[in-house]
Image 1 (cartoon, rainbow, N blue to C red):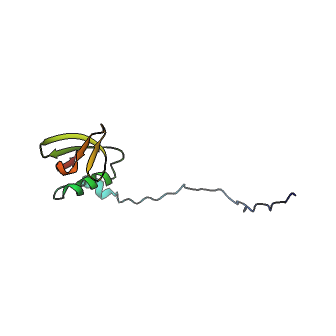
Image 2 (image 1 turned 120 degrees about the vertical axis):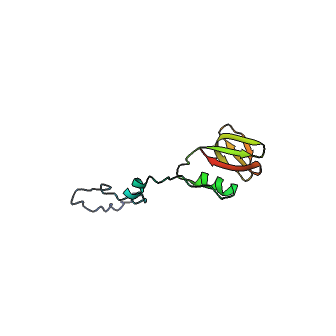
Image 3 (image 1 turned 60 degrees about the vertical axis):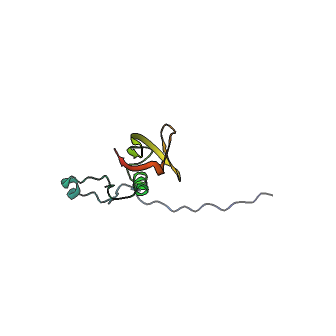
Length: 108
């Protein structure tokens, strides 16, 4: 019981395909911004700790890890954080820093 399958339809290509040769990208970087020497790091002043942590993790420069200076209730530490859960920051050394102990956090 052999069935003959229908043939596949393909249009003829009548010219050179120039796929992805012309690309336009408008991210907002203009000559004016480059001339003004604009600081692209977000300002973290006047925000609470959770907002600062969220901005660090959602910034364009955060890919896997972020070097930060954390001011805790009992001192200041410099760590490389890689993630967070609901209650703790997770460092690259698998240390857990309670968010309730964080007084301030800033990106280095």
